[in-house]
Figure 1 (cartoon, rainbow, N blue to C red):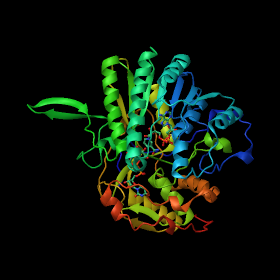
Figure 2: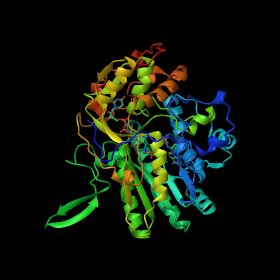
Figure 3: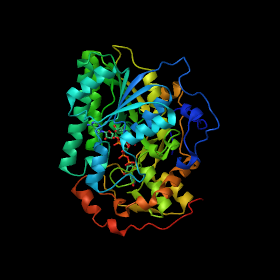
Figure 4: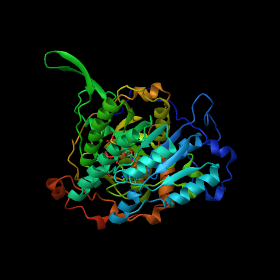
Length: 458
Ligand code: NAD
Ligand code: USQ
């Protein structure tokens, strides 16, 4: 099943502006196979668009890093703010990104060498270091603040009461602090927040999920258009619902200009910017807590591990490629709501797919079988999902869809760094409740073995 409302055309290929004068040595570049740099479409700011000062909260993360590079490459001034909590969680969990990510300092230095462009990096906790956040905003005077800085794994958020409490404290405080800081800094910066498709719940709508707001008939026959009812499936997803209420309140009370992007599951690893130098490589999470479904299946397929389909695999979800995450952010930045407008909400997905169908695609490509294991999550075993993504499409997004050609890029990365994989981290390690934990008791992390598969071509 695949449903979206915008016409899917061929993948848009573009060349980073920096490549035109890049001194990057070919030997230090990552595999380029999937990105064709020979076609330079519209690159950089063309005079019609405004150069912006963009603060990226959470800019060291999986989405934030390639987005920061993309925005810098496009000519915007970028400042990253990140407390490196994601790297610290890896240490706590005893796992690591499959790709060897460089320190933030090395990353921004490498970007300067490759592109000639500066990205500032500041190690600040947006949920705790309020005064520093206000000062940074006052000093940098951003036009836009992109907010990625949250604990984003649903399984991690369901692991223990400690991780549940941390996720709520971190995510809700961070978003509240951001609104307060913009007000205290007396600045009219546009906040662009990464929300999630999961705020809507799955399969409850009974029709197409609109972009944020839904027409309803209230008792007495009164017609209204309200925020879509929230129906989170994890503590993490619940924090995104709480965020949405905060945005609604601060827009109404202080006329903050806010865009909430309800993004689907991001897949892929690198982008045309991150492949320019090995020190720019993006993180790749494959473990049971932080690895997301398609990247996990691609990793498992490349390593000869049976694909970990939870339950029947009947769960349908929205997907978007990492390169499109970055492009959507720029589109959102360039199309802010006017002062006084209600919170702008976009559904940031390219398409919807069922988990078992994705497993089948990867299985066909790699020859590795799907392994249907007990579901560690409390979620509908099967659901339909029909989502509107008209707004981004109308603003020119031509989304990348699941394309086995692009799977090669992920597969190449996996093969390159497979020696860094700890097979004991592959099975799910967080369970939604006692019943789910009991049903998964037979799963043995030590049973997973990596096959020495060199060839993964179909
Ligand atoms: P990530 O964990 O890789 O990156 C988040 C970054 O934020 C990390 O670098 C972390 O150190 C930082 N951070 C967290 N709390 C912070 C704090 N209090 N102060 C400063 N920095 C802090 O996650 P990601 O995959 O890049 O996701 C980014 C955002 O996009 C999240 O809000 C997530 O909910 C959303 N999102 C992600 C996906 C996905 O598939 N990855 C899909 C939909 C939405
Ligand atoms: N799943 C499997 N096998 C796996 C991993 C996952 O079958 O090995 C299933 C899960 O049960 C779930 C679906 O795949 O039904 C998606 O799981 P996921 O881990 O890929 O994605 P999710 O937990 O929903 O979270 C991810 C990001 C989160 C983001 C969300 C977007 O981690 O930050 O908000 O995707 S969405 O799903 O649209 O809400």
